[in-house]
Image 1 (cartoon, rainbow, N blue to C red):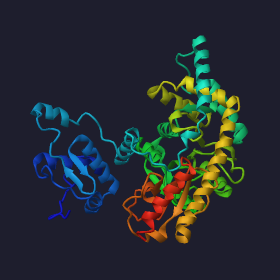
Image 2 (image 1 turned 90 degrees about the vertical axis):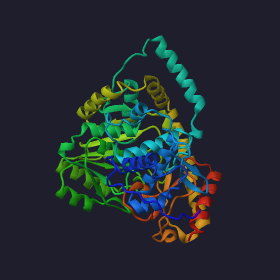
Image 3 (image 1 turned 45 degrees about the vertical axis):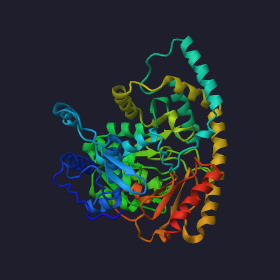
Image 4 (image 1 turned 30 degrees about the vertical axis):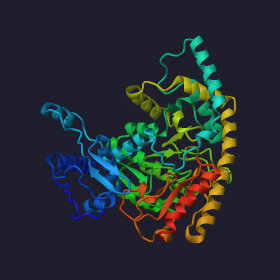
Length: 488
C-alpha cells in the first residue's frame, strides 16, 4: 500500500527519560488527541527508526507494546495501523487518570526495557532467540525426577526444609568447591563459594558489591548486554575495550587504564561472547598483572566452560598467578537447561560475604531442594557423565553446522571453527557489503549489531547450533541462504 504522506513524529518535546518511553508517549498522545486517527497507517519500523535516528529494535519494541495494550494492530503483509477501537474509550476522566499515572515509579533504561520485553516474549510462546543455548531434550529427566523425589523425602523426614544459609546449601558449595579445585585448577575453599540462581544474578550481585564511586566498568566492544544493563542499573559508567581475532585487546585496555579510573572489567575469556574466541594465555597473564597494578576487579564469566572440543581448555583466570582480584562466575544452565536456575560465584571470602548480604535483601536464600539435588548428582558422578555425553553430541552438531554452511554458502561466508561452546561466529560481510539487513529468518541467528548499540551495518552473525538436531541445523542454514544469497 502506498502512503500519500509520510507520518512525521517529533520526540524532542516528549516526556520520558529514554527513547523508548519518548516514542511510546508520543504515539499514545497523538492517538488520544486524534492526530493519528483510528485506522491510520504508521511508518514501517525501519523507516521510522531512520526518521528519528533511533535503533530499529526500539521502534519494534514500542509497536509491540502498544499492540499488546490495544492501541495498534498489525496486519500481515500490510503494515501497522492505529486500532479502530481504542483501549481507553469509555473510561471516565478519573479512570483515565488512574491508567495514565506514572509518577510513582522511576523509569528503567531503554536497554532494560528491551531485555524485559524479550523476556516476556519468551514467556508468551514467542520463539526464544537461540544464540547458543543448550538442548533441553538432552536432559536426563528420569534421573532428575528420581533424585528430586529422594531429596524431598529425606529433607521432609529430617525437617530440613526451613531457612538456610544465604550463600547456599553447604552440600552444594562443597561440591562446587571440589569441582573448581579438581576440574579447573582453582584453590577454592567452601567459604569462597556462593550459590546463585544463574550467572545473571551473580553479575548483578557483583555490580552491587563493587563501588561505582571507585571507577567505571570495562566491557568488551561486543558484549553480553544483560551484564551491561546490570552494571548501569547500579550506577556504573561503561567503557568499551576493543577486541580482535584473539579476544580482548590488551593494548587498548592499557590506554583505558591510563586515562580512566576503573573499578572492574567484565570478560568472557573462555569463549568470548559473542565472537566465541578463546583468550590466549599470554593475554590472560597480562590482564591479571594489570589487575594487581591498577587494583581493579576481574569479573570472569565462565558461562560454558564444560563444552570444549579440541584439547583441554586453558585454565580460567581464577586459577592463574595474580588472580586475587578475580570473581569467577559459572552456571549449570548450559549443563542442563536455563530453567534449572542454579549458578555460582567464587571469590575471596570477604567478597562472598558481601554478596550474601545482598542476597538476604532480595531472595533470603536459594532453593535448598534443587541445590541438594545438584549436589547429589555431582557427588555420584552423574553430572560429569552427562557432560561427557552431551559434549560429544554438541561437537558433532558443531561439525555438522560447519559442513552445512560450506554446502550452502561455499566461500561466500567464512568462520573459524569454535574450540568450544554452542555457537558459531559467521563472517557475512561479502554478502552484506554495507547493507542494512532488516532481520534474519528463524530464531537461530542473530546479527552482530545486536551485541553493540552502534548504528553500523552488520558484518557477522552468531549461529546457535547447540539446541538444534542435525535436520534442524540444515533447515535453519537453508533458511539463511534463501535470504542472504538471494539479496546478494
